[in-house]
Image (tube, rainbow, N blue to C red; front, side, top):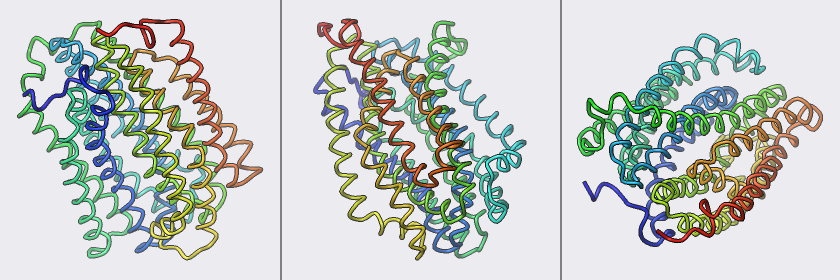
Length: 453
């Protein structure tokens, strides 16, 4: 069992985090294949309207899923703290609480949204031209919600104990399956946009089943028994408060994206196509940044549980440098190869689509430096129990997107969309950064002057 877990409270922080992050990075890249393959096949086989249909409603699913995934990430942070403190009893109780939360949330998010999906799509001003395709795609995707949440629950469990390699294997299998099924259900058997959604759902189910079976076989001693099925109130409170903090933080970001998408949908179908293609590229380039921050959160959680605050300070500094390096690389790639990437994704020869997609892409990557700071600060603060400030940062983000959606975009058009997130990243990074520095000066037990354990 020792080889299947990783104690992050000992050894060089940078080496530990990078070793842990690489499998996570590869896994996240494979997971992104779901969206990229859907977009490429939709664009090259089904046309620009299919891309617009997917992009017009994806934010609805993202809003709900980001809340659920954030909730689960918060639970993972608490598990990593219990693991770092070598408190296996509380770890098992935490697992029990996490399973109950995830299954409940997964069931609710599968059933309830479907009842209100069409009115919500109308409220988002989904164009009539693509409405039916968009509805077909998103309603099928919702059927895979529970499987997606179960996979993320299992992945969070494995990350908490220091195993980031196993989830990668399952994602590789499901991603390859997704590509095969996309080809089968869109090209060989012409199921249209429904085929891309069905392929994604089946792939998510496979990765979920494999993850559950693996944990049941190899981590039985870390799973709750009868005595842990009813966790202590303090454990439940910690899981729920941290989970809700992370969930609300993610939901705030996603709700703002939903409102911004409404403003984008009100422009025209080629703009929706351009935005979808640019977002896929932006999100692909974000993966290493988010992975670094996520791996660091597990490291911070374990060391916070063990009282190793000196290691937390050291790792955060190193993560900032890594984020800056990747930001510079992303700028070079986007400016040199951005148009080629956009055309591969969309299959479109429209200069209007390509130019607008490049506008959004260039604006975003130029401000990746501030995004990197924001990601590291947000996740590490959550891992150290500072739950309120990251949520407030998400409120800032939500307010910024509301302002953009209702007042900026109607006046400035898509240029206003491209400006929105970079400005928000700077404001949120400054907000959390000032708090981080204040805590560093005032609370020795949190970041700065604590002696090594």
